[in-house]
Length: 397
Image (tube, rainbow, N blue to C red; front, side, top):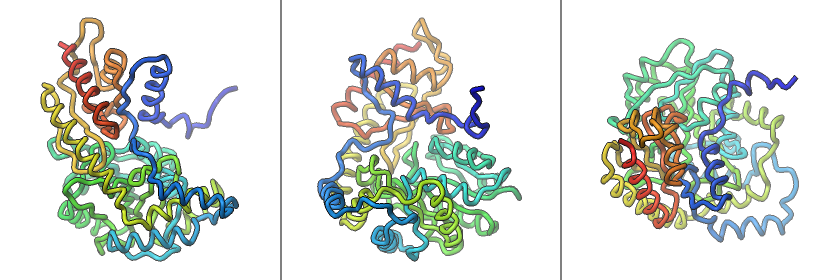
């Protein structure tokens, strides 16, 4: 009998990957689809990183790597955390994994027991709640809308905490909104956490370097909570290395040891060649990252300027990542004469079918009134995509 385990049956398919697959299928049919669905830089990996990968092959980095990562990479991460974030970690507190998503999965498996509650602010990255489910935890969602720049308040956080709360999981800069918590906003949340010393804080900082006119602040910088914060980061977004699959955590030693133990049974060490390339990336002066961020900033402004001419859309100016996350609920209930748009899922399908533009429904991110558009695409593509978006929405009356 074909029956998968309950833990798999409870999981949802990644909405971002599902929409990317649909757009690829239409492209394969020869249709001119513009995909703004996947959170992936459209830049190629910088040459100096590629050269390091090639040299690693020539230097015979072809054997099993240590489970928590090569010492040279972990040492580079320790130095980076000190230099960029003012954070003190020892090498044995760093665990390198097969992407930041793997790091998140390890952490949740290591600290969450069945029935434990994990507080997740919405909008959230699509995999957060599914990884909590896989750990047999219970998601407690706090919602924040466009009016608050998609950021929760300390009052909302306090109200969500119960005796069963085990962890708090969030990202800043945020996927899908691009919102960035300021130092003052984080301090207000820290003041709440200070009353509850058993709550683990999982801080996803994968978009750390992709900010516009604001400073990224890690919640691990606050001494009141430092000993129970797990920082998650990686090389995918900043260095355009999504396919290299290298992420890492900086954690309290007891969590790092638990994740090392788990990873030793699940996957062992991450790709050896990719680790050497990542070491080169993390040790660099980030000049290539800054060059990419300048382009992302121009694209963000271009998209926001064009979207300002579309009636019925509410959005804010995201100071980080490479997404816009407009509230499109004013179009729900409207029709082009054939299809009535009931929700964001139907709107995204409508835009894909009628205008060949792929975006992702906000429902997957815990905000069903929104859609996510990635501006990690060329200016030419973005101009055409927003024109199509405007034309598609204009069909709905």
